[in-house]
Length: 178
Image (cartoon, rainbow, N blue to C red; front, top):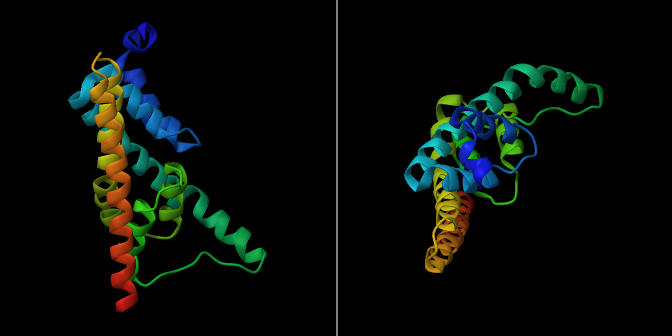
């Protein structure tokens, strides 16, 4: 706990931005942000770090690895899937709210798929904000003695997962009826 509270905020924030560009779970960093900065500060730091992380991940996918990956796939008789712009929002929503895919893979796949950035970032942040809040709140709750806050934070996280699942089903159902 002392090491966490003595870490310079800029160093901690940089870790929140950069570590999830690879297979490091952002959720752990959000919990630690709650411990380090409290609920409000941790949520603000988490959202800002998430926005920067998503921007960098998208940029890497679109401008660093896209062309080499397209060439590599073409040599093997495959191509990066293309989708109609009218399906872009549904694709983005379904991809972001489906649990299980790590954040870094979501960022890279959405960037490779050609989702427009002006849609990608706001929709991504809105869909991920409940997760950030839940994990930050859990982290902040761990610093308190009241066990009810921990239970409430876990319940809030479960509620967020259930809500995302419901949204996913509704979007899929509306897509199948059109």
